[in-house]
Length: 347
Figure 1: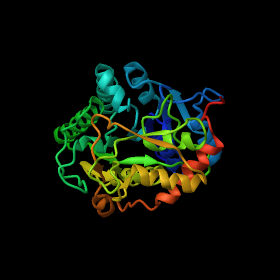
Figure 2: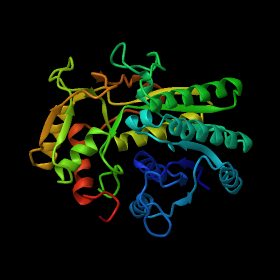
Figure 3: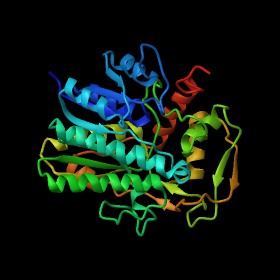
Figure 4: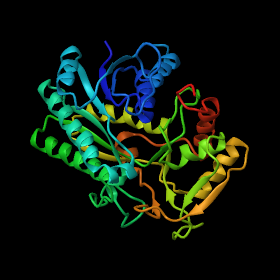
């Protein structure tokens, strides 16, 4: 029997790509999602998971469940014997978190506490957590390594990720038989090369590349570039973009690390290379074979000038390294967006 791994929020962008890699690596993922950020497909499945099934040619166990539902979680853990949990479920829009802090703390913190309590009650003590480079706040040096101070977050979303990291660290300290790998993502973009699954933001995209892709496919008229007076090569913000399939493979490496009884470990998942907004626009123009309109507008509150990873530790300790470059990220993003102009939904 292959190991069962619970994937919370597994119908989302990163979750669904990880579910695919789990199956490819010989695991049996069990997916839960509350459809907050997922489109319903046929047979009571999220459309993303239905398509993952198509790609891998295997059935994937799915249950509609919210991590805030304690009784539902208890029932789930009684039904399945999990070797580990991958925790993606949570709210993730920076701007929205500033407007709705309580909702973010409730879902992200309380949801995680329910999950950890249920894991503890059922003796499941292996966790991979989906964290974010946002925990670093405004970088005091670059590239960012895992020793960089954390907690100086500028928004409730980032703070919620930081608080969860602290909860997990404290738990691992108090109970040495727990193992957790906290993965700090930089900026995941792109899509599986089949073009069947990808990022499908509901409403106006908060992140650069889905927005750029929607401009390229004609869903949006132009891109607003927030500020061109940063201290960078062309004045626009620099970020570390990583292919979502590389990111997903990092989670498989993290699962293997748990087997070493590693305690609590923290790793950056990035490429170590920063690209500016305008460089990303150019790369997408190349992939899509068309010119993309953009306008320079005022800076956005809370944006830092530059942010990119030092990913050396993940390579040393996980044996993982990002392999896909910018052209591949944009080609795969364009394939997904051009084949699915309205994402997973029909209209």
